[in-house]
Image (cartoon, each protein chain N blue to C red):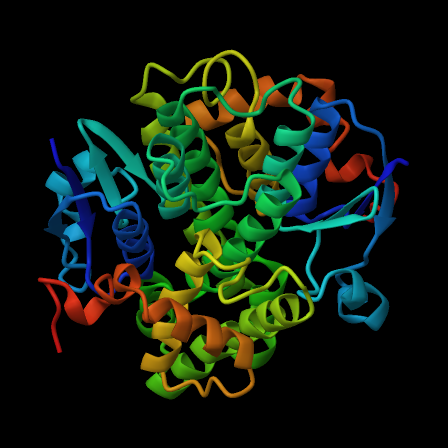
Length: 215
Length: 215
């Protein structure tokens, strides 16, 4: 039975899982949950994922939520190619790089938070864009220093093969580009992003190449 | 060589790592980084952790950052008692429960975000408290449904032994109590919190019992 991924073309968290599935060459059916139309709040989807967020992955009847947990699961069940190094200290480095994006940038800039700022706190588009770029910049500054100052950084965040850190980073860079954040202050991030996007697994996971994409 | 934990009594992320160290019975030296006085932005600490957040764990010269990555590292290097189940699907469940807190509640309510809302966006204490409780409630509603609706939930989030999900949950409940959020709508969360706090490993990790605590 093929897997089924409940996602949204523009969700970075869904984008991460698409990359992981592609790297593992796992087929999946795409179930689009239109976040801007609030499909995620409807009873049908809440029955699948009570949190009402995307992505959710159904692997043969197992319902998995939270993108990093899903990717760790995929790496444990379908270990080839590995998305984490083998030594615990190296694994910790890769997970930490991923979590800087997944915990400290992305959630603060998520659609539901931007909506709260707009609708409950009455902020305008300029204030939202400043907020958005502020948190990306804080995270990217840290990531850039951690990447450039460490000999373990290679073509990718950790060595010569893409892994969980790259999977978290690329969707965040794509978001930054959408908000026209200049990448010049983060040359290592920009270089790694290019290395990733040269790979089919990353390129075909891009929001613009999803069946549910919109202008 | 004992480990050294750079933390802050009130940081939930440091609280998580303290619990994990206690559960594993690992000794550590406490290095207090006073977040409200901005010790985390000083060059000395930035040299340890370029992201300027807590916690950082030094394990015999290995510098580890990001609380969940640190806890996974501890679980891999010091496997007894385990903080994750053994089956991948079970591990995914526990990680997802932890990430609902660590990705979707905590970062949005972090000190630096509340400061941005106060100083850059001019919101008052009432608006901040509403914001704070809004995101806890959204996450706790989801967690409560995921816990109450799943036979794998036991005395703790997953079965009869505490693990990573409980480690993430307890500091968030302590924060909720601090902001006087009523726990009545989340009876399973409240019950699990009580089970955890009855354990020495959780109780001694509480902010009020840290050497750097303040009123």
